Length: 464
Ligand code: ARG
Image (cartoon, rainbow, N blue to C red; front, side, top):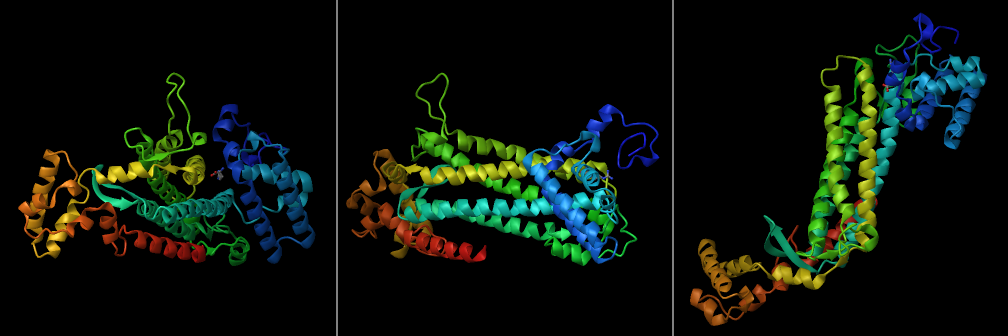
C-alpha cells in the first residue's frame, strides 16, 4: 500500500498510526488463535462470490489455494504475524494478496471485518463447545463406572455438614453425574444460538451485492443466516451464554473439589488421591496436599469473572459494532481453557481415587444416622409421625448420654420408650437396611443406583 499508513484501510489517512496506538488497538496476539475459523469463513465467502459471479474460476481457485498455503504456514509456525496489520483478519488477507496478487484483493467484496469476526467467533466457539461436551461426557462416564462399582458402598449422607442419613457412594457419584448432565444440556442449548451465520451483514447495513447468504451459511454448517444485520454484527449474547454455562459447570466442579478436599483430610479420611495428583510442602515433610481439587475450586473464580467481564463489556453499547467488542475474546478464551483443563483434571484423577470403605462405613454409623428409620418403623406400627419423632428423640438422647449408637440400645430400653418396638427393629437400625429401604426413583438403595446407571448409560450413548 502506497499511502502514509501502510494499512489496508489507509487511503483517507494523512499520517501513520502512533506507535503506541498501534499496539494498543491490535488484537492479533490473541485473535490469531482462531485463524482456522477465519480461513474456513473466507473460503466459504469466496465460493459464494464465485456462485454469484463476482469471482471467476481462476480467481476462486487462487484464493482457495492461497488460503490453504497460509493455513500450512501458520500450522508450521512460519507465518509472519504483524502487529501493524492489527488483527488475524488483516494479517491473513494481506498475506493472501502478497501471495496471489489481484485475485486476493477481491476476497473482501461484500464483507466487513465486523461480520467476519462475528462469524469466526461463532465457528470457533461451536468447535470448542463440541470439545467441552466431549470432556464432559468423558467425566460422566468415569462417574458412571464409579457409581456402578460402589453402588453398595455405604457412606454418611450430610446436611449442614452433619451426618444425616446413610447413603451409598454410588448414589453420591450419581448426584455429581446429574449436575454434569444439566451442564451438557445447557451447552447444547447454547450451541443452537451460536450456530447462525452473520456473513452478509457486512459492516452493519448489509451489502449491495446479491450475496447468497443461505449458501454461505450452509457451506459453514450453520443452521441459518442471521436475520438483522445491525444485530448480527454487534450481538455477543452467544459468548455470554457460553461464559454463563462455563461458570455454572465450574461451580459444580468447585463443589466436587470441596468435597474431595474434605474427604482427603485426616479428619474425614474417606478417600485417597494418588500421589501423582498431589504435591508436598517445602517445610512440612508429612504433607500431601490435594492441589488439583483446590486449584479447580480456585479457578472457578476467574471463570465467574469472565462472565462478569463480558456482561459489562456489552452493557451500554449502542448499535452496531463498536471496538469494545474486540475485548470479548480474552475472557471467552480463558473460560474455554480453564473449563477444559478442570474437566480433564477430574476425569483423569477420579478413576485413580481409592476409597477407605471401612472408614466410610464407620462414619455412616456415627451421628445416629438411622434415627429417621426408627421413626418410620414406628409409623408402620401405627404411631403418628409426630409422636414417633418424639420417641426417637428420647432414644437418641439416651444413646448419646450413655455413649452408644442407636443399634446398641437394648430391646427393653427401647420398649420402655414405646411398646410398639419389637425384635424386628434390629434390621431397621442397620445401615444396610436403611439404604436398601429407600428403593424408589431417585433413592439411595443400591438397586436404584444400578438402575440409574444403566439408564444414564443408555441415554448418553444414544444421545450424543
Ligand atoms: N479485531 C476486531 C475485533 O476483534 C475485528 C473487527 C474490527 N472492525 C473494525 N471496524 N474495526 O472486533
